[in-house]
Length: 144
Ligand SMILES: [Zn+2]
Image 1 (cartoon, helix red, strand yellow):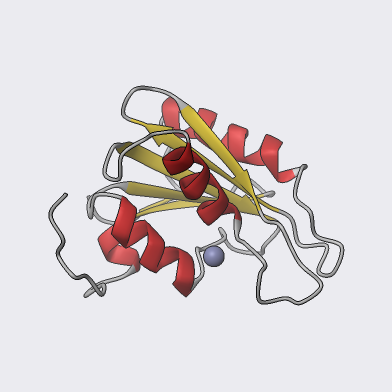
Image 2: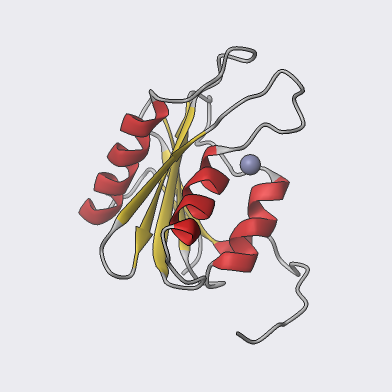
């Protein structure tokens, strides 16, 4: 797929997903950083699973928007690998990128060629695949 960037028109389905991420971003619980992030995970069945970041006074338990969306969908009964795309948005100068922990979780639960749509509030965006974001991801290669 390669890296896409803002010079091109973002496909409509991905723009819709990014809009979903923008909407759920408003529900973020961020009393410490005020840094709101939203994520929208598109299932292969067309369902969208939303997630926002949730902070904690002890910092360590804080959960990112991407992982909230992924964990929520697994709890709702969706199988790892049954996702078509994920969009993530935050107020960053460049399109926001998932942290290292989220990249590892994406590598575990999503196909290596699944697109990750990254955006910011200025309308900039970039798309990379899961494997582009984390080449050589750690895996135990467990077959389910
Ligand atoms: Zn993260």
